Image (tube, rainbow, N blue to C red):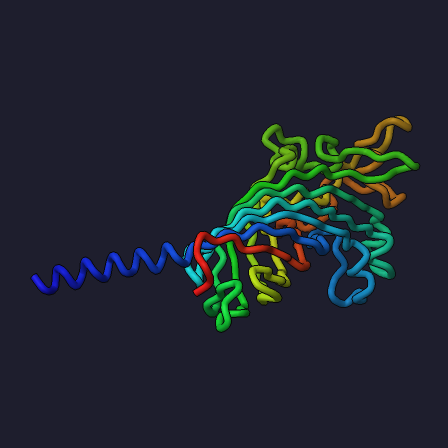
Length: 270
């Protein structure tokens, strides 16, 4: 009987402690977004060239802290990604390929956040922690490029041989993503938390930048044959099947920046 009462007290005590650990955070994100893919410069092509595709990003977050070490979080982020062969790959063979793209990123995601030490906003002891996160979400993209002063959508144009397939995955404007990354947060005052965060978004398509497989071999039949014009911008003919990109690796994108959030709790700080 004593064991039964002990276990009952333990369950009630654990439940009370967990309830009192329940906090709600609401905040904003501000930083930059950039991408990794077939148009991104290699590590040997200069650090400055790698920065040419960085664009501003903003967002909002809502976090439920059900334990000082664990949270679930929802995000709505807005970013932009871009890259240009002739700028980012100067002096390489990709400069003559002369491809480019830009796309907005609108991402909605949910994730689990794990604090590597206890964190309680407004406490006297648990005032900072590094953390990691992983989750799932969806991203809306609209891949485009500039040509002769006009902007063209690339998703449905047959710029590559592989895009003729009816089930071509890249035609879908909304793509699943897996966000993962790490960060550091610090309790700056009362219930206010400032954080810095780096997140990678794994995608399941290689056509965020509209570059993956091989050339179609087509030559423009008119000044309005945009699939042929935008498929090969090198200025030289490319035979059907000639490699245009690397289809063995999918594209991805990143968010990096600061978060500022305020904790709302039904209980006073422990």
